[in-house]
Image (cartoon, rainbow, N blue to C red; front, side, top):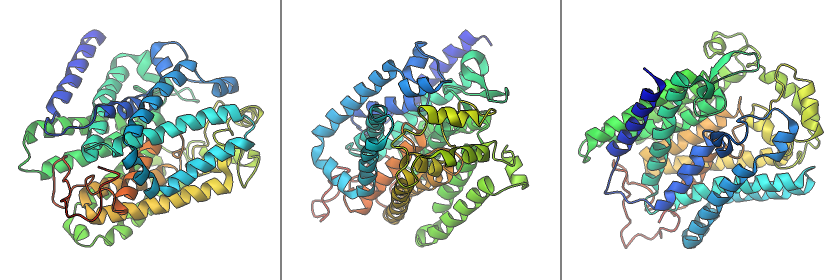
Length: 472
């Protein structure tokens, strides 16, 4: 098949998926397109790379520092649009932020850390972009139909990125494939490297699985067959792209996230929600030990890892001695800038031009020190606690929030997951903010009652004592 014909089929197929998944009874805000576009860019390539204005990768410290004015402009426009939307929903925003106080403290500390950065202007610009992640999450959770909005975010992004990745890998080698530091060929799809392809596929595929299961259980839902076809196709694409990406961390997280979601659908766990604690502990221990302490174990090689975690231990050994301050770090997103990064690169000839620690916890430590790590720990603990509370109120929605919190914690063992403009970080924020809102009794319209199967959200009765502020 020629590349031109494959492209036409791909475009028609994407349009068909959108058509099959439509639901006119659900009316989400048009502002939902802002987080869809934001995630679409974050989960693929910068706008400048798609336009051919700048290279898709950076190979010098100066490029890491300067960035692209085109990309900055695109993100600024989206951020401005998101802020305008949130101003119109200011009554709901206050309740959301109040319930999500650990995240507010973390972002405030990140802003404060700009003061001791060696590059305060760059750090401040990056903080503005990081705020964009939170703004897009708030645009979604304050939608009039937030659960449906989440489903549409997953589908709209996945319907475009997943088939397009397959198209680029199969028919456009110059765009869909690249080479790793050892010169080995890798599939990159719509992204710039296999790890990024793996993580965007991971978060989309878990959401697709959740939506697919909900339609399976909704035996009386209108248009059930065509929605099963659309969501099942997206899930199949996700599994196929994960296999093509060969990203061991994303594959392991998808498997364990799938196990967690499926297990929470079992009656004996739903009847006793407390049992989910033991389930999560077992999943985190199994995944974490397999990826981090596997050593010579066969499971490490089965996941495609070397015994040094594909060079990650070399990177960790090179960056830890270079951190300028153990307590407060180098400043927000400032470690990989200037002479410091040149020094790291000089000690990593094989992995030269690396721009992350390949461990979320170490990455936070490098930029924000022990204080930043403590704040991330607070967010993880409070997010998990509220995800459990959400699971008790609404097992189906809570299972997905719990899965995103759990895989973010596990993914960050071997990748920099707690970092701005990263799909796993965005969905982690989404899970924490959503779980906080519901656990605080704010999101009564943002959840479906137990037993509900549609993407539509049950509205509270007028006698409900808890005012729907956040997910109104």
